Amino acid sequence: MTADFAGFSRWATGNLVDNRNRGIFAEWLVGQALGVIEAGDVRTEWDTVDLRFDDLRLEVKASGLSQAWNPLVPSTPRFGVSLQKRAWFADTDDWVVYDPPQRSADIYVFCLHGSVPANNENVADPASWSFWIVATSVINKELGDQSSVGVSTLNQLAVPVSWSEIETAVREAARTPGLAGAQAEP
Image (tube, rainbow, N blue to C red; front, side):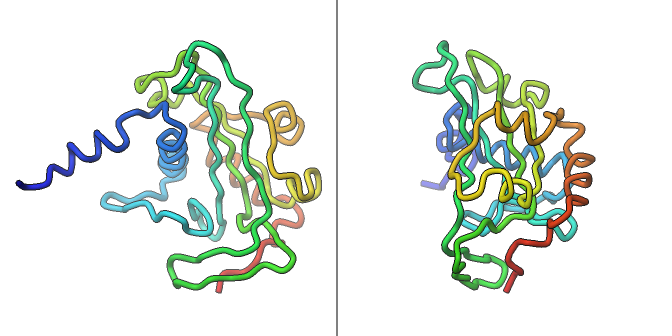
């Protein structure tokens, strides 16, 4: 038997409504908006941040109103923003211990898929998503050591943008005072 990579890919990630797959798709969607994913690139699992744009480290968090296990009943979206005790930098294969714990990214990109019910077609449509771009310094100041955040709080921290506005919003967030507070890469 010869392995069918396309078949494996379809089997493993074919359901974009699944939380894990939707999250990875959101990373890819943001990467496409920023132009940071080149042809032939492969996602690095467990890297300290999800994407790098210019000199910025970005953490992409995704949620949806519709879940695979109950697609017709809207859920209450939450996004994880926990402080980290350690981080692995894939490009150097270095582990960094944070004492005290901190957030590794410079900027968070929160992605909410809003279609109910969700299906592969509407998950794949950038117009069915909303995005909040928030500098980590703002999260640190406003949320402290809080481990998750909801949409109502995000609306207080940033104005939601469309997929085509992500790059502009990231560049604006990069001008936030105190942005350089994240741990330097090893």
